[in-house]
Length: 344
Image 1 (cartoon, helix red, strand yellow):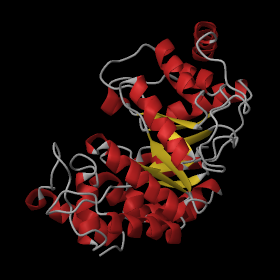
Image 2 (cartoon, rainbow, N blue to C red; image 1 turned 90 degrees about the horizontal axis):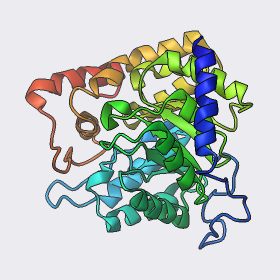
Image 3 (cartoon, helix red, strand yellow; image 1 turned 180 degrees about the vertical axis):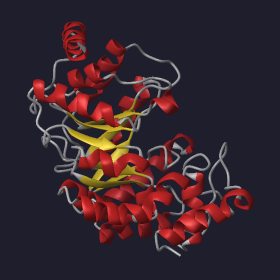
């Protein structure tokens, strides 16, 4: 009964959405300002495995972006085997960065890791015009894909979510849909995701619901629409359920914990992709506390505390409206999680 209703919903949404987007051919997509600047014409530049949702390090005294530490973090992930870099997302405090800072961070990422890992730039916000501008900039600067979150707070109906993602995908940069209803108050339903996946330039979903049942229902819908796991990837955005997500058929993760344990998260994803349950569990057991306790306060507050505690950044400073972690309340919690993971 559920499958029949879902197929009917897909058909109805598809009829509504079909006039809302016409996927552009490679020849009609926006011309790059630099030859080879991005992977906009690749079928899917995203890689299975571990994607770090990277923090943005700030100088405690000035509050400015610490570009030296950013470069060090980028190189750490190259050396650790991280498959994809997600930069300027929620964990990167993108909403409190100036346009100039965004540009500098993207240029730095491209300069440091282009060709070594896929660069996924967060370009989502409420206003589609702002999303368009940030997506075009990311493409022109050499990023490989755009992570676009559902427009938060305004709660668009499903047909308008489909229109939002497909219109932005027409710009030419491969799009990863970001579904995080706990933050945005709007959920991308499976039927809407299946319609979006028909667009050749929408290449993946980051699902931060933690609902493993959705993984199975969505994979069934995608299969019915003849979408292969190579052309549309499914990433977990919930670290606590990431191992099970991939063991049960997902393609990888976009992870906060990967900031603190990049090599271990990469190894975990490879074991899970190979369906090595024993090895995956042995790695995941060491990360379990991190996967939960890094969210004891709003992300990325505890993650920056952890990175500072490990000596990887000089300050745990987060820009307002966030701030430093309540170390009296949570310091021991994070320290214990770091010890369990072998990080201190």
